[in-house]
Length: 427
Ligand code: GDP
Ligand code: IMO
Ligand code: MG
Image (cartoon, rainbow, N blue to C red):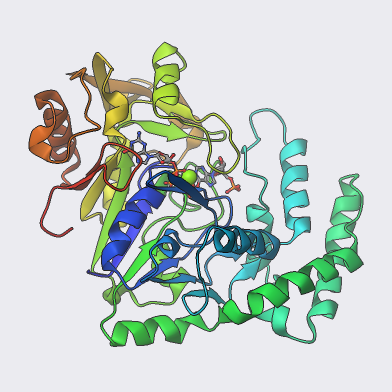
């Protein structure tokens, strides 16, 4: 398969894990390149359900090799748990899972600082983070004081950790929080290192040598375009580059090695956490989408906010990421909806906007302008070809293609592998 970057085109939880699992049948490597265990990627295979937070979703196909690139921030204790859980369920990771020695560590003081900052923020300023320490860990990286996976293997690690804990404890003290116990944390890190050591490697030559051998790579994005640190609804975003460009900087692969970008997009929209969401439905329809789509966070269990498909977001995302094809998911969730709406533009103080404004105060004032669409009101889950879909569902898909200017290459009508249709030759 062509070297592919797969990204979320909305606010995350588009079904990336499911689509990765479908695509990995034809790839040699799957690489995570940003985010941390704030991600929750669900894969359903038969009656088994897996939720992956750090390890690439390709791990569930024994033929693939899987890499956590240096752009990811890694909680070593959470990673050990994830590895152990997978091993207990029969997966063998030896020789096919690698963690970049340059990946920055998320340590418990990052989680505590994340929680303190959220707690102290006034109403309206809370981000609604996953409290996984993501912002503080990327903050340390940018401030050049972070610890990296390779440091775990260095005899100097206890001293490096001690310095970090001392500083974190000063900050936690200022927030009125108890200090982190250095001795316990060191022991926990050392226990984690014993488990992680065989997997830590310099993944940059590994991936580039694989490319030279013409092996194929699927880059697994986490979060989504509207949560990207630069392009999202700042400050209500995550702290990494969730857009396609992040694959190069977060995996160490040159831009011309990437053949295509696939955008995963839901047939409607969801968001977890705070921040503007123009097409949000706070009524019974929002509740219906949440219930039918089982829209509860895969990481935190929080109910996801639900709304109509937002074309302004979809087009912005297609432009920014250079999306070559959509993987359109959760079409089945609309099966019972009598009238479906697509937001084609925003009305902001009387001005018609067709792109996402940078200013979130302005975005908060945006009112969606809708195009209505007749629902098909019958089941799509059992369809295995496009022709088997009801005419209304076919028309909805074609309309989304027309409005976004991007073809749907993969169409998903249920959470399982089998509920996926390939609509174009290149999949
Ligand atoms: P990710 O973070 O993008 O990987 O998405 P999540 O796993 O957090 O959330 C997507 C949810 O939708 C998961 O529970 C999937 O099992 C489920 N899912 C994926 N595709 C479909 C689909 O086409 N239809 C339905 N009904 N569920 C889907
Ligand atoms: P996947 O990969 C949906 C959201 C949080 C919060 C904001 C910042 O499963 O699509 P953070 O903990 O990153 O500092 O939180 O980003 N968020 C996600 N929302 N899916 C995700 O990942 C998310 N990861 C973070 O809810 O609003
Ligand atoms: Mg998710």
